[in-house]
Length: 132
Image 1 (cartoon, rainbow, N blue to C red):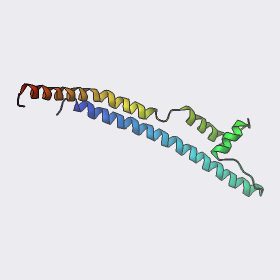
Image 2: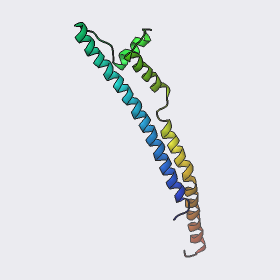
Image 3: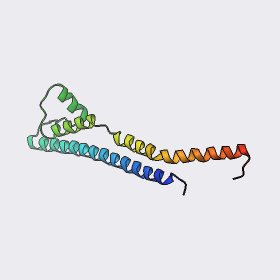
Image 4: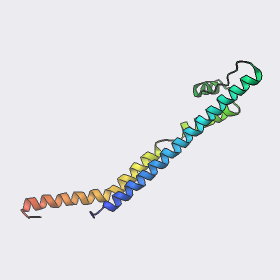
């Protein structure tokens, strides 16, 4: 096996695990947000049937941001959606991808070092006329 290749494989595996974890966390958060929006829309339908009025609960993400900007007190599912939106804006979704790339770069250093040494040896042998 080529020197440094084992470290490169470990780095690739570590980077894949970190990127997979970041993707899973992002997917999980988006799923929670979509489920909250669906619950809000279901509550809206139930409210319409109960009251007989054409009511809107403002389940849309843009509408909730607008309500929050006006200082309206949000309750129930709307508050949950607003909290999930705030959380998604505060966290860095690409942090895990950047950490995975960093792990890959760190673990690729030994492989790159030995790769460059092999190329230098080839150049040296070519200049001195040595057969490999």
